[in-house]
Length: 221
Ligand SMILES: NC(=O)c1ccc[n+]([C@@H]2O[C@H](COP(=O)([O-])OP(=O)(O)OC[C@H]3O[C@@H](n4cnc5c(N)ncnc54)[C@H](OP(=O)(O)O)[C@@H]3O)[C@@H](O)[C@H]2O)c1
Image (cartoon, rainbow, N blue to C red):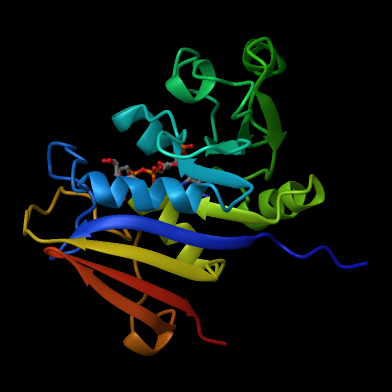
């Protein structure tokens, strides 16, 4: 039987000019209501996924503050297994939010054991420089993870877009402009050459709240 990849929802808050953090890495775009919406969305999925850059820059807990829930997996994508062992995704409430790190074949057994001693599950996916995302998604699906909230950052978002792995997007536009060529955008990477190569989405819902705009897009086949 063919294994289906999990349903992937990209979730992000960005400025009007498409930045998800300032040039110094300040990620504080969301107000409390937006955070509540994000945490509500987290209650509906089997796993939250982020890239190593987000762990290194923000050290998020990836937990749920505002609602009762039964927990989910936290999945980090780290090709060289170099996030700090005392990162919040490893130390904060692992019994509710078990952590999985997707990595590559290049990592040493010694390093894997260090993470496993902290109850982190390591999945090797790919022999290249970076994690083979489709293969990782299929392994996660096999473990029973059928829905994933992809919470960035910009470089991981690009890899998902490039490989056409996004099923839905939930974007919040925060009411300011921050600028800066070094400020991380919603989608980084090399980009496509032509508009016609870009991934296309169907706008399902738009709603506004105070000065914020929420957009829901789904994949257009
Ligand atoms: N506003 C928001 O909603 C929001 C949400 C999340 C993050 N952010 C912001 O985004 C920024 C971080 O974004 P970022 O682009 O620097 O980092 P990122 O996308 O979180 O992580 C990228 C890193 O993941 C690793 N990786 C492994 N396999 C990969 C693959 N197949 N494709 C892509 N990456 C892969 C790579 O490092 P290795 O090769 O070393 O493994 C890569 O450098 C932070 O400033 C954070 O605040 C904002």
